[in-house]
Length: 73
Image (cartoon, rainbow, N blue to C red; front, side, top):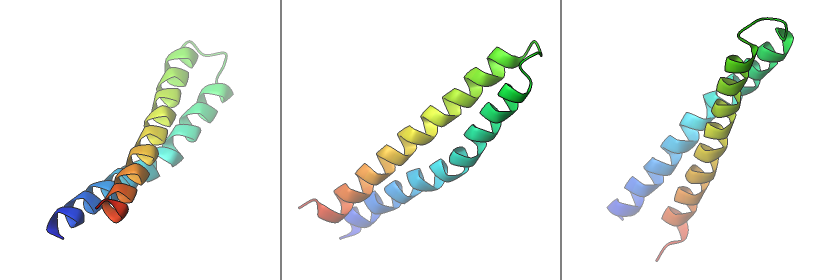
């Protein structure tokens, strides 16, 4: 029982990390597209896309870990 609780906590931690990334990523991408004429457009866009990919990864990993904790024998 204790092992499942640790795995569940790890999954919830991944989901908690993904929550702010889900808000920060689109904001950075939106900011990049509003400043297309600036010289930092490409680096900011790359950072925004990387944050979005990180959010997707954390969501996937978190849901997978929570499901593993709940349904693993």
